[in-house]
Length: 60
Length: 493
Image (tube, rainbow over all chains, first blue to last red):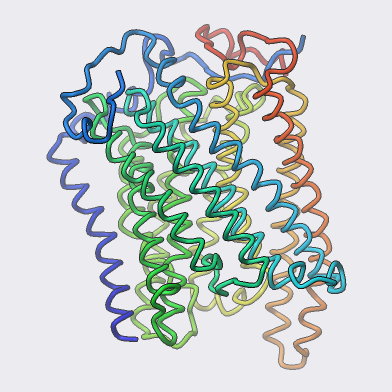
């Protein structure tokens, strides 16, 4: 019982801990330095902002 | 060019950068086979799982229905249903969507597709062996982990392949910002193999003793939802909603806050399934607190998706992807807040052990996750096969059948569950009568299963027609649209 619970708590700490480590990396890497430009990364010249990219197939 | 082997990909410098302006089409094409393999098998298991679920639902009200053979009894069919839809449908669909999104967001063609194809084969083999094992009577009787011990290593191999692949892809991504969807996907692909292995070691291969089993069980089962399905579903929504309407996320800051708070709080949630159980009070309390803290990620996602959609709700008329995705996103808000509320001990005593919980589970896994996956598939499949969906009418049938089906199911189970809970509270009501209160609602739930199964058959037909490229190809709508005037394309609806 005790060993199992210890392992479980270690598991919780590991999951949250890995998230904290990744967060530290992201801050160091400058991932959060420009949050205005960041969401535009999924758009490009071919599919720019303002161009919808999905529609029901037209009837023919 | 793709690196030739796993070894050569240790160093990113080995991969020359040859992508030109058509990189998106090239990236999509590179994902074709593995993604379609995962999608195809997912849809197959969806049909099997729906049928198993439908039969199980009818057995709740008609216990004599199909009880002539051991493998058709409720005790086997119900876990077979759960595991088929969890591992066969939802996980495989999620992996398919995840692979495609990962390649697009890393902005490199999918690498090591053989690794992924092997993963898909192992995956389906694992599900097949597991489901047959359950039907043969080898169920482990541990919720969400019913697959017998000889099936789980096969699934684990597949998970591990995908985890390794995710690390390689992440390492080879084009430099620049890591989009929020990618964080979600990366988290899901890395956490899940580890979660699955831990739970299997502690419960199936070397079982720990006593009530700690319950703690591990619910730690795992809730994390499947929170650290596997939720991140994949949200990754899809964070990509599809802005991409389809052509408008960046309303507040990128909130999306980041949402991801990191989810990463911190979700893994503590599982113990709220054990309120009132024989556990140290601090464990339950910590979990209840974490469940309430989930308000933060949920509300940030809700605000963000709503504000991104604001002024663009007419898009629901012209985009099948958006229609399913927004249904899923709205359900995510509802189901998550409902989940947090169910962790409040005073409310939990009413809903625990009633159909209310079953309704909640279906709202999460179907209303949120499966709808997200349908939406993503409507976006992805045309881009993989280079063919338009053959029939707008069938897409609408699919949507309305499953939307009505799931609302009917969740509505009936919720109301029935509350009545059942109130009856269980009442010392003058016998246990048998408390079940009888739920019976009419369970009948309605049985009927809702037909709607869902019918919707799935329509969707499976559409998918097969796409693979066979039946009919006349209609260039345009979903494929390669660049003209903004399509925004007013409601005429096609």
